[in-house]
Length: 131
Ligand SMILES: [Zn+2]
Image 1 (cartoon, rainbow, N blue to C red):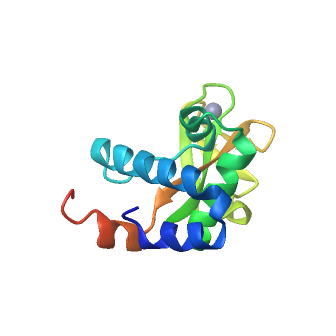
Image 2: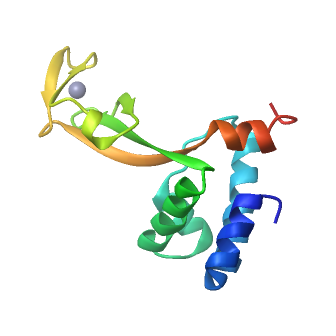
C-alpha cells in the first residue's frame, strides 16, 4: 500500500487489510478523474462488493486517520438538485434557500447525503504530482 495512514490502519485492524488496499486503489482511481471527488459510501460499497455499513466504517476510519473528511451535501427533495455542502451535520441550517424553487426549504423538503473528500494532507502528500 502506498498510503502510510492505511498501512497503520491495517496494522491495527488486520482483518480489514484486503478492503483497505481495495479502498486505496479506488481512491487513486478517483483522483485521476477529479482532483477532489465526492466519495460516496454506497458507490464504494458497490465497487468493493460489501455492504454500505462496512463501506462507511472504512471511510470513517480513513477520516480518523486524516486521509478523508466528511461532507454533508444538501439536495432539493423536489428537483433533486444539489444545493450546498456543510462540513458537519450540525452546521446544516433548518431552512436552506433553493434557487430552483425560489423558496426556502425546511428539512421536510431537502435531503442530506454524506460523502467524503480527500483531506489537505492526502492531497499534499500523495496527489501533488497528479494535481
Ligand atoms: Zn427546491
